[in-house]
Structure formats: structure tokens, C-alpha cells
Image (cartoon, rainbow, N blue to C red; front, side, top):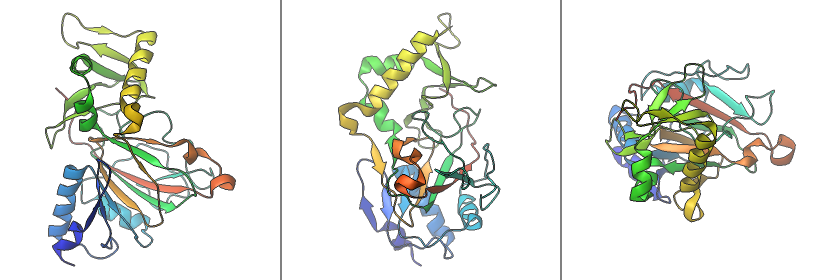
Length: 276
């Protein structure tokens, strides 16, 4: 293997790169691993195509290129490894009803959200896209008035600990403006945290803000959104702090309708607490 293998990319819509001629089951040299890590930050998504079956052990090995693994989810008995979160449209095969609560980053409810997420579609259904949006592009698309208002907001997680994060903050690696969000797991927002004007939103205002964020994401016929149509052998590495995502409605369809869907996800321990 030589370095040029990770440079034969196909350009995607506004986001990410596709690698078509690299076998992740083979031994990957350190210099190539470093380039992949750089590419994940540069392109936010790196999609490896036409992979042979990637075992749970191998996915964990690849994940460790990016740091320590961390998973907060129920361990399904069919999971191939304790650190692999197994998602399915069949409860006998994996955890169901995952990813449809709203646009989000993984681990927004944690003090330090996951740094990276890695996805391998073990069993590909006929339908069931995963939609991604580059969060810096989303920020840059905002009007000055909307951007100024969002800069004043902090999200409050609906989890028991009620973790609070700035809605907008600089990415800890790239320095680009990004968002910490979960539109389905935010119990409230706080305006002007730490100032004399600090106040928490009531439910009606919270819903209004969530709807506004959603409309900004899908505006202009979803021009910022990349909807990934899974194919056999797809393996995705994402900069979780730079990309929001949501599972499509079809991911919840039964296996009788679209076939068996099994997704293996690993997440990497966050090293940075979002801050202004």
C-alpha cells in the first residue's frame, strides 16, 4: 500500500470524500492512518467503499486510531463486540428506533461529546439513508441576525445531568464555528449564560427555537444536506463535532418492507468540552 491510495477520491455534494481503492481489513501504515485522520477533519466525512466484511474486532481496531472508545448505549446481545453499538430494524438483531429523534451530534448530552463516530452497514436494506450536514456550512449560511441570536444560546440536555453546552462554539481542532445540538433531546435553552440577562426558555420558546434550527437545516430544498444511500461494503468515519446527522424515516421500516438493516457504530471518547 502507498500513500496515493487515500487520495483517489470522488467528490460529493458539499461534504466529505469517498475512498474507492483501499482495503481496511489489510494492514494500514502509520503514515496512511495519519492522512486519514487529517482527511476526516478536512472533509468531515470519509467514506470507504467496497469493503469486505469488517468484524467487530476490526472496527474497534480502526476506531482506536482516533482515541479511546466510549459507548453509553445498551449492549445488544447480537453485538459483535462490547464497544460496538448494533442498530437494526429488527429487535432480535439490534437496538431499534435509533436516530429519528431529531438532527444531532452523537453524545451531545455528555460533558465532552464524542470526538468521532464510525459506521459500518453490516446488512444493507433496500431503503434507509443517513442524512448529514456540515455544521460550519450551516453556520455560514445563517443571516447575520440569526447567527447573532444563536451565538447567545446554550442548549440544555434532557438527560438527568442536564448538561449545558453553547449552541455555537469553535471546533477544538479546526477552530471553525460549529454547533452542539440535539433537536430531540434538548429540554430548554439558556440565553446569555453567565450575564445579567441570563434566562432559561419556557417550553413554547424552546419549541420555537428547535423549529427555527430545523428550518435552517432543511432550507433551500436541503441544499446543505448530504443523504447517504448505503451500499454493501460502506464504512464511514465522521468528525462528530463537525457534522450533524439524522436517520431517515425509512430506517424504521420493517425488514419485511425493506429487508434487514444492521448498522454497527463505534464512538470515540471526547477530549474537549464545548466552550466559547
